[in-house]
Length: 404
Length: 141
Image (tube, rainbow over all chains, first blue to last red; front, side, top):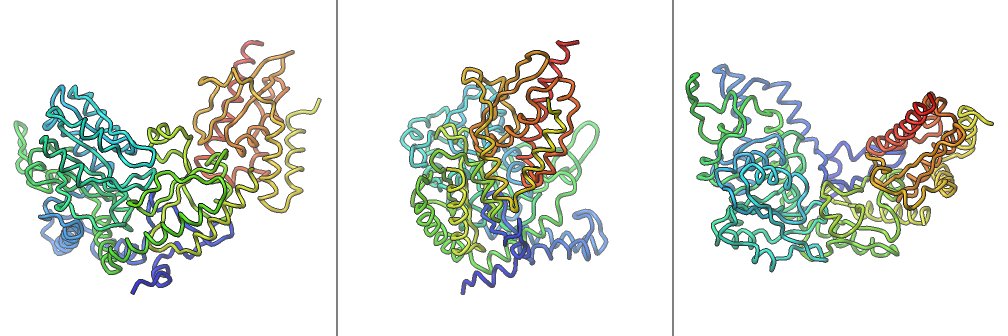
């Protein structure tokens, strides 16, 4: 039984006030809040288990290693990844993307094409521009249509035997629109192109099955799914991860080291040079346990309810235009108010205790596409309520009255 | 002629009359309406201040050894903020602008109510106004 009031009690930060008003946190697309279970996992790790992993023979090191590897197994199961060794722990989603892009010269040659979508955030544009510069490949862009969906017709036309890589986000952070990644992957594979899916906005909000999608690489951010910052995941198909050169050199990632030659360790250690974020990995495991307990289907259903309610309520304010209003989307509402700057609105609603994001959301090309300086973005999570949406709408109405 | 210090104190006194943030913001928005506007033709890339979520253009002219600022912004609150700065500093000698302290921003409760990224915008505005003053001061020397 999904009980939002009970869930809210499990998030200490939701009990605090901002500017003298109860916090209303609608910036979940930037980062999610953490339940007590995750905070406790971090405290417990440092209080009882702290040791370096995979190297000491002493009991503490063994216990810490076991916990870290249990978290890897939980992550594997959560995303239906075939084997635990295909779960690479990184420092975050951006690191995951860069780990692939920096070694992708083994998959992309001079004159090849890399396709990105027009709704990517900078993290999923810049590493690929750097790759293209390095190997002399050409970057192509899938345009976005007025409704915020990708122009799939143009995508099909962009694909050719020259296409080596396609990179696309599962859900756009700026608009919240869910992209048809399964179809994108299927078409890319017909041309033997590889596909990386950026799952920063999907993880923790919907069930993700990397095998059902047939993604070649999938990246995630721990902190957007109730886990701590500084931990992310990279999934890759085994043969591709074996071909991909390591991103960083150091301890843990080696097999044999001499001054003449070093051979690399197997997966996942090849990509985990140095001491990893042990506490972060273990706490991510706790976040996954927590999400599983509530149930990803329950979360997705409830968040969709919030989306529908929020969309309807926002439309009662004259002058509001929602970008990317389509059926298949996450609980993210990106909107503008006629003649008013998002910054002005964000400033006023913040004073009223409502945390929304304003600006270009690190996706400037998206804003250029719609010829706006930015949007106001309200992004919901399963611990938000309809009452909070009502308060946001009242705050917005006050801001509009004040500014108009 | 009132000094920068006099005007800044005057602004602090005006803001002290209000009981809550909403009235202060409304007043700031009003002040924005009196901003000496930058000429439309001067709204160029080099007059744009970096580091703000909204666009802010500032221009400055030296007349009779005093700096006169004009500005504009696409956001109403930002326009109010720059209007307050310009009211205090416009028509003053470059050396006085360079020496001006910005404590009054804190005193009118502006800085504490602006988030770090927005505060950066404010810091950038202050820096830009002072840069103009430095440039004109070197002309005078």
